Length: 259
View 1 (spheres, rainbow, N blue to C red):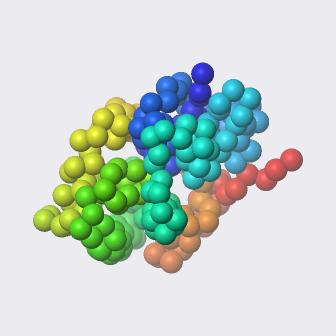
View 2: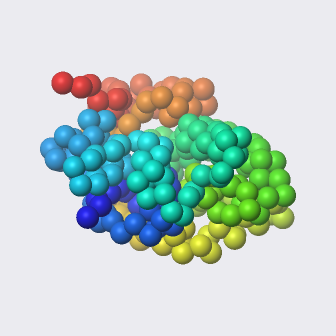
């Protein structure tokens, strides 16, 4: 049995779930204890304490991109990567951009809208800036899509499952693709795929549970991870005060130190 430690709202977990569904790989979904941080089994499997983490027999794999690469080799049919090396590089670059640039914008919006890190003028300013950034990245993605039916080319694949979690998260928070754009048409089309529809259904079912999260964050029981592209987004977008406040209150965390 394949096991996937995940959270339905994580875009990194979403792309792995879509990939596994497309390949017909049955897996057991497990939600690690990300609030209490006392899930010793999960920590032993993934020292970074991040989702997703894939368990295939005696093999444990973390990091969503590495999991996708493992799945492509472990279950090669149907292939999700394009055939030509240049096309493979193209969709991998789309994945990198979405994972490190687009994700950070959506993550920042979630910090404000769902986790109530700040209110008032600072919140309004950050949300306004995020909306402009989403519009920019969506315009970029529209150009990258061009006249292709799918980001992968003629068929759905790696490029599409890498892009759609981030476009979905932006749309969920009020920043959908521009009406009439090629990206908007693709987004409507891609949501009809069973693998994508089922993955996003799990998101809508999980979101009501977020109502208690602001209190858990304020109490320090739930520490959101601020590192790499996320920390950079918060600083450059004007949220340095949020980072300092989180550090002072102990309700943010950085990369876990190995022992």
